[in-house]
Amino acid sequence: MNSLDTIQLSDDFFWPDEFNYTTVRQIAGRAVTGNMNLQLADKVGGRPIVLKDGSFTRAVLKQIKAMELQKSQHVLTWNGETYQVRFDYEKGPIVAKPWYEATDPDDGFRYIVDLYLLEV
Image (tube, rainbow, N blue to C red; front, side, top):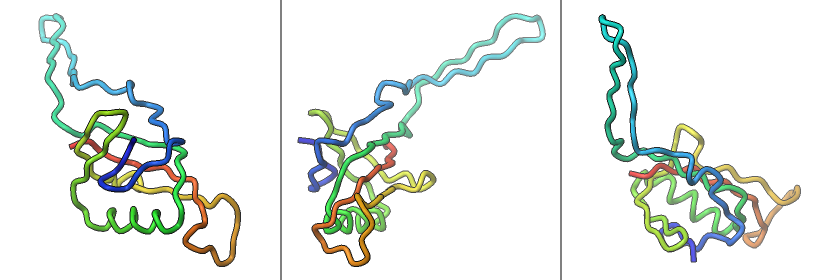
């Protein structure tokens, strides 16, 4: 079961870029002599985690929005692994689109949701 803190994530969420991140930072340049100068270091935190195309009811989406406003650290459990995360406010941490247009949606109304997180 995948979850963000105590909120269960729907099975239709997926993490499209899960393996497109490296923890190694590289800076390459040339010395005055023309030799390659390569510096490598481990990154500490900051891995983007984008969970795409999940679905929530309006009631659960309100809970997620309340979590976003707390500006605190959360626990993401994904495929048996645990990550300490925060919302990525630069990306717009939650993108929610209604399944269809409704003038007065109730708490059971569903939304397609993308979550933008950062591992800390």
